[in-house]
Length: 162
Image (tube, rainbow, N blue to C red; front, top):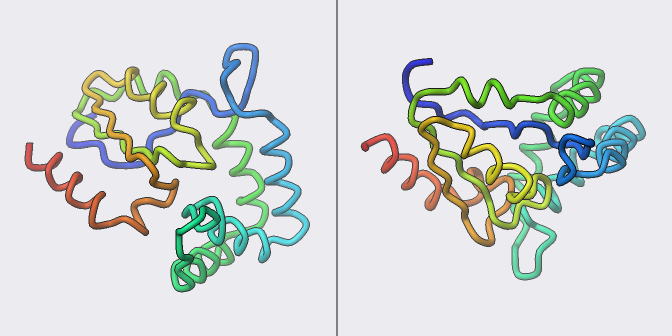
């Protein structure tokens, strides 16, 4: 691989298995699939209204435009693709893909990510990268790039400049 890696990095495997005892319980992903299948429009409203951006935390004001935009983007996708995506992102093992990345890679993670806990994701993925750099943002959510661009963009620019 060449260039600078800036995309979202998967962890090796998100779901709890015998080989990944620190993973998230499979029932959590079953709940996501059930909520999506039961009422996709509500699912795509509830997730950004709460844990995705941390709007369910005390003192964090929801941003209606951000929620509506997340809902709009979600509703444009296919229901079957969304359903299958939950399996793909939770059960696919990306270990060898991470180990194959040889360019400088900045791994950013919110310390209050309620969807993908930092201890079971970024802290495991970053060491697999040959030139990985991990930056954890205490108190920030999974959607930190959208709701905290002043912090995230400054760090991205600093990384690109070096």
